[in-house]
Amino acid sequence: RTQGALCALCQPGSRDGAQLFCVDTPVDLLLVLQTQAYSRLYFWLMGRLSPRDGIVPKEIRLEQLLKRATDGVVREVILATNFTNEGEATAHYVGELLAARELRVTRLARGVPVGAELEYVDAGTLAQALRERRKMGSEL
Figure 1 (spheres, rainbow, N blue to C red):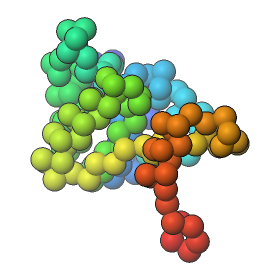
Figure 2: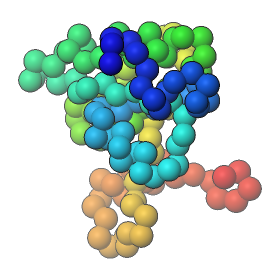
Figure 3: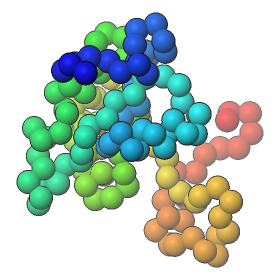
């Protein structure tokens, strides 16, 4: 592919361009594709910020993301970086950049895995699930 070319998943007309799903790596994208839960546009950063390891904003594909996200079609960017310190830092940094450009920025929810029993869930995950709980009923 040439720089800036779109892959087959994101060719014009093939998907709704209002949402852009952003992951760290193509491997993460493959996992998302397997869910068949999202069928719009995708973008991978090819890494995550880690100043300690010398990975600063210019080391990942932020410029390409900004160009893609501000094309006039995308209205929301869904950040799906990993829930590690580096992934959280990346999501925060990217989120601030995109929000400054008046885009809606959302983050994947996190919490108790499907099928899990509470007695086996760690306290941090349970606390996060409690903070990110959602209303049940007709508003789902």
